[in-house]
Length: 59
Image 1 (spheres, rainbow, N blue to C red):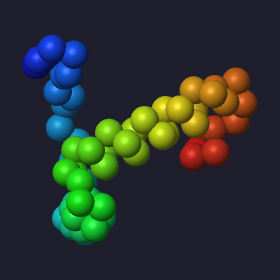
Image 2 (image 1 turned 60 degrees about the horizontal axis):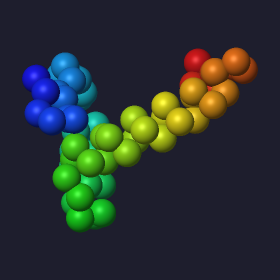
Image 3 (image 1 turned 90 degrees about the vertical axis):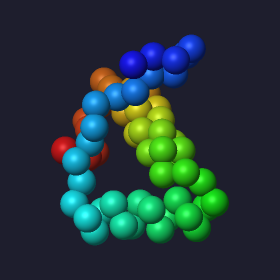
């Protein structure tokens, strides 16, 4: 689904403990969970796209 320049991605399944951690962190930052997820994905992609020719530290 697309609205303007925003789109919805497929659902991501996480365990309840992870979801609770995410919700607590978002609340502590006074942000929506979706903001935290977008920020985390952007940081991950920025880090990995820059070094895509080298080794992946998360593997």
